[in-house]
Length: 249
Image (tube, rainbow, N blue to C red; front, top):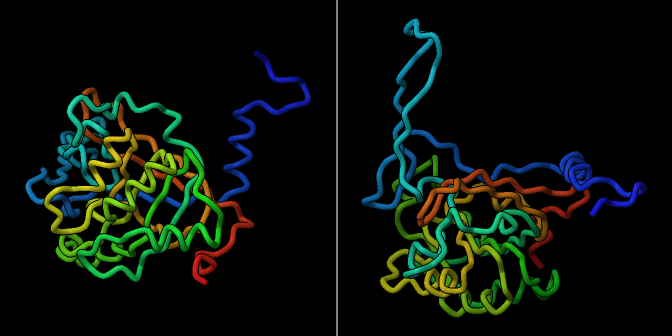
């Protein structure tokens, strides 16, 4: 059905949102030596043709895992018969984004409901369909000390994950290697979230620059039967948005 003539086309609304927002890239660049889950394939980029060598063009072969860099976990990552990343509805990739500060979490601890309830007390109830991200500050290790990034990270408790399932979040993520805390053996957050068909975002960057509420666009590759995919994640921050410091009481 066509829009009334006095209303803008949807693409015009999108372009207007881009024009009126600061775009924050939440994606770590793909480069050799980036941190990967132990046992997963390293990222490798090999030049197959090069202008410097006199070839007519430049192109590369890439080798990487589904969970390399900034990425989504699909339900099939942990749930037998769960949705693959190629089957994730495109609508999940766009929408409101909530960023919750958890920078005081101790290493290797699973945070409970307190940071979520504190955020809601200041900003209102998390809405159905929100993408909910936890800023632990762990991305500070990504470039500075990749070995430190790969150990001791905090995560979500099963209770916190179940709470976000009840809130009907569409995505839950963090700036850590896993949504479950380092050392977890039973992965309660993964099982609760993926079991509810909620995408998990891991290895996000620059969450600490975001206000409590903004918008997210994050598109994975349509990998058939894929358990996850690298993605490019962009936050749309209205220029009138409060600073990240306003998240704190």
